[in-house]
Image (tube, rainbow, N blue to C red; front, side):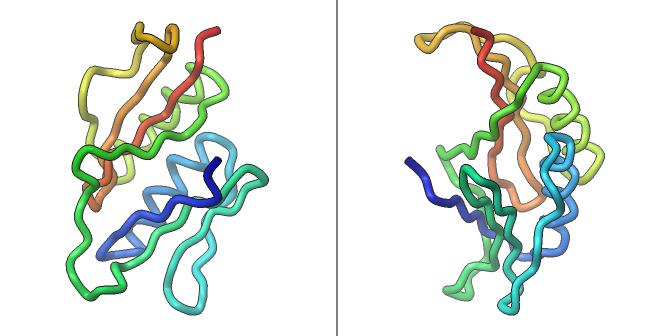
Length: 126
C-alpha cells in the first residue's frame, strides 16, 4: 500500500545516526544521503526517508501520527528500542511488550526520534 514514508528533521545527520542505529538493529543497511541532503533507506518493500522541511519551517513531530517498522521477533524489537535510546531517542508509552487489541496480540516498542517523530517497532504474535 505504501511506496515511501518521509519524516522531517532539522538536522538530517543527527537523524541519520539515530535511524542507522534503530534500522541497523533490524538488519537494514545505513541510509544514503542524496545531493539534496535527504537520507534514504531503500528496501524491497518500501522506502523510509528523512528531509529538512522544504517550506523552510522547523521540523516537528507528527501529532497523532506514528511510523511503524516491522520487527521479525520480540528480540529484534527490543534491540531496536535499545539502539534508539542509545542514539538520542526517547522511550515513550509503556515499556516494550505485548498488547492485546482488535488485531490480536502485538509486541510493540515506542520511541520518539531526536526530531520528535513517534515511531514504533511491531511484531505480530500470531
